[in-house]
Amino acid sequence: MTHLGDFKAILLDIDAHLDSKDLELLKFLCKDVVSFSVLGKCQRCLDVFANLEQKGKLKEENSKYLQECFHYMQRKDLIRKLSGDPQQLENRIRANGPNYLTEFRQD
Image (tube, rainbow, N blue to C red; front, side):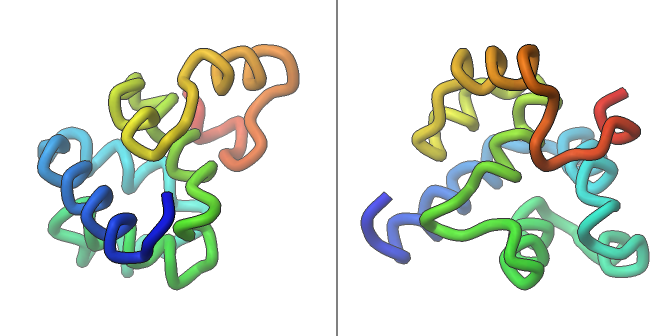
């Protein structure tokens, strides 16, 4: 990712590929970072992304937290949109466990 505008466009594209069920799952996965009351006001995944940015968990140069969320949502396609490698991420999680999500959020 090279330009902030490009990154925002990628997040907008990802939002378009997520439905209300995905939104609820993403909210659940982010509860350890973003408060329940704030997540309750999120109407779209873009809202969740904005809150992750505010908390320093989502940046153009580091989208690993969101990639890990997408791994548990079984959305390899979205990991790729963030220039991630789904297989490499899966191998790392299998070998070392998650880096960003608590064990409770993985179930």
